[in-house]
Length: 264
Image: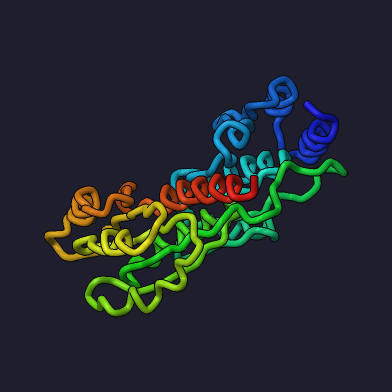
């Protein structure tokens, strides 16, 4: 463990932000932070491209505070998904640099640029461009979760709203926004037709996100999911129902690697 991180851990312990067992565990293992109720994977960015992400549902504010402190101490940006306004309110007071997106239910804190004079391992250049397309306004919460995830991943997110197949003229009118993107995330409920249409216009991966938006026979998004899985557009792949985070994460990896290859 480097001296800068050890100093940060010691200061957090003295300030009461870390328990004695947590402090000892982290000084002995630089790849896992043992917080008792949580084991934080500090090596995930090296292995997988991005740091660990926090799923907020079911967690207390105190638990998330500990996790956030550890991530920030190691130079990682914080992303917490499915967070309620009641959870976000006290966290914004503890972390005034945080931002809460109430529509997408996402909490983000940018990575610190420096850790006690040692430059954090944070890439400051854009990791690529991704378009996030919604079929309708009701799909916005899932689209916002994807957008926030892309911003956390360092990608530029271009939003195109309400271009579903009920008004087929709207998509071609917005195609210029898709120029030079590395991936497109398409968020749609009802019959889930939009990803197939988008796939016929672009030369990059299309990540389809079925949403639970729709009437009875949509079965909470199952109809859209099955429609997207049966897409005849060869560049369309599909994530789970309402899984905006998963789509944003995968698109962020695609964009990051595509941009790196272009620059090499």
